[in-house]
Each structure stands twice: as C-alpha cells, then as structure tokens.
Length: 259
Image (cartoon, rainbow, N blue to C red; front, side, top):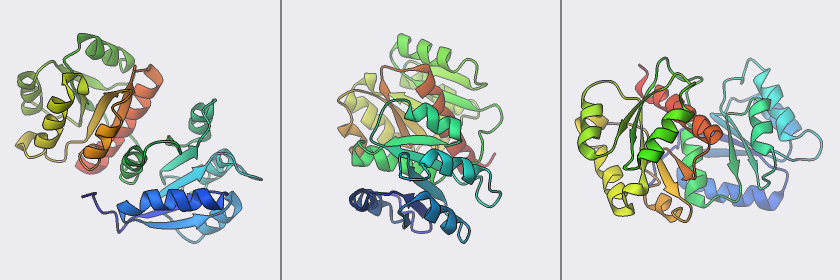
C-alpha cells in the first residue's frame, strides 16, 4: 500500500486537457489534493492565494512557459521554497534548462507510473537545502560502481561509505550517522528486493531513505518497491544525474531526520 499524502497539496500546471487528466490519475494513488492550472498565468494567480507543497509544471506551454513560471516562483518570497519539478515528454536540453531556471527536478511524462510517483513522493518531503556534511552509505558488489559513484560525488561535500556485502553495510550503519542509502541491484534482483524489504525494521535503519540503482529493463522492479524506496537511478551512471539524484535524496533525508 502506498504512503498516503492526504494532507499534501500539489499544483499541477498543464495546458493539455487530456494530459491533465492522465497526470491527475497517475497522482491519485498518493491521496494528495491536486489543484489544476491550464497555464502559467492561472498558476501564478493561484499561488497568490495558496501555497502548495509541490508544483509540477509542463515545460512547454503557450504564452509563458514552465521555465519562466519557475523563475517567477523562485523570485516570489511567498512560494520561493516550494519544490518545483518540470514535466515534459521531450528530451533535448530540458533537464539543463529546468535546473538553470531554478527547478528542483525534472520528471518525464513518459516514465512508468511507479517511477513517476516515486519522484513525486520524494519531492513532497523535500527540505529547502541539503544538510551539512551529509553521509551516504553505498551498497554494491561491483567495485566499478563503487569507484564510479565515489568519483562522481567527490566534489559535492558528500561523504560516501561503500560496502561490498551485507556485513560491511551493517558495520557502516551501526557505527555512525548515515543520512541515506544507495542499493545496487547488481546484487541480483532477489537479493536487492530482500535487502530493501528487510532493511527498515533494523534499529540502525528506521526511516533511512533508499535510492535503488537499476539496469535498463529493470523498471518493473520499481512497482514492487514503490513504497519502500525514495528514488532510483538507471545505469549506466552519469556524473550529472548521480549528483542531482543523490543531492535530492539527501535533502529528503534532511526533512526526515531534521538533524
């Protein structure tokens, strides 16, 4: 059963009527209240009256586009800290343009339903910024993955504690503060599922946010773990995506632990 966000409020900005319905239906299992705006102008008018917990906006719209809407939201003291994600079915340079405009994230409309909701769920609990000196536990049997991820995060200020097996992971999580956990499915799908499903009951991992590293073609795995993980990355890994996703995960952790 999915975590219920009945007290959360999402503003969905989408000019296409059919797509508004599709996206609303995809969000329905979360239980959040969803307000709809058919364009950026109406979204700004809405924000003048209410402050939602999350803004999801189409990137390409007639008149004012999602990028300009995001810039105006970020310039408005009343709603500048509200998490903002850009939605689009395009690829091109949308992600870079979204981040340049001040968006927290970018979500493809073509994502599977579970993948879409996983990203939205994390955004609904996002802290304004990443906590100081965050610590990330990384569990992967692959030396290549461990080395690559550590290299990608080297300049971010994130401390990465890597484990190659469950014994090492247990030692890491038992012996100090850990803000979040990355689990690589290269352990084997069954092992990764078992780990994720059993990790939360352990004393050292209550509420520990988890990001899953999956291979292309493993997206159906997200549906079975949708309410147990906070995010995912699809391999092969890239430095830009790794930094974005893990920094967002640690902002989520900051809101959970408030340490």
